[in-house]
Length: 319
Image (cartoon, rainbow, N blue to C red; front, side):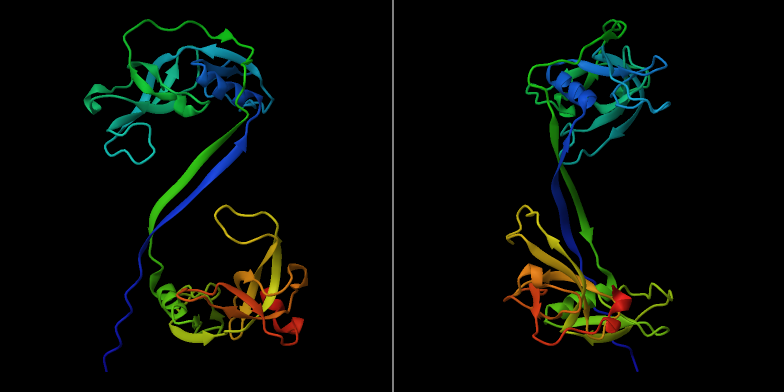
């Protein structure tokens, strides 16, 4: 008897994108503000080396260092690699070279883009200079790129107090990852079952544990899992947290609760939002059930069933 064909494995393009916000210490603040003012700053270490980009602690001694110096906007390529297909958000929208440039007066190299007509125009040891961006805001992108340079070398680094009007004290970097996700055989079946408002896990043939979501293999025994088991839909809150910070683009008022829920028949807790009950009344052992919205491929949230709380011994292994 022929076996049933395996379901087609799902694939989907996904984007993870978020703004990364960080504050700046005195050295990084001076460095980025300096770029806005077309000034390149480094920092001098306790052994007399000049580091560009600057750091706030000596990489050899771990001492705090704040001895700022100004270096030249010209330098020498120490190594490079040609980028045939620039990606979105990279410094140039045409093929270019990634280069490490040791600026005149510096002892370390700075990574940036070199605008060149082709790889044959790039070499280790070539002289380059900074091409400044037309509009500068206090970011590494204030250096638009490097370009070939035929002029003289810059002088020795000069002391700089790092003082500028309206200094940059923080930055926001847009982090983004584009990729194609293929969940695999086990999770494809899990996702397809969810679209039918069913929750399906897989049982290990050795230890008999049921994993939801399924992984395709038992993480304890290391053997493949193929025996599908429908679990839930009800379950028990094993542990939880109260969220007090509102996430951007998430239309849920704070505070709200996210919990680990052990669905009936499963040996692994999954996480989901709890609603339909005041946040300060959510508790371990609370019995809950899924709430689906029309057209959704997964439960919107879980709500109390009204049943008595589960005994701790029935879910303690999943806390």
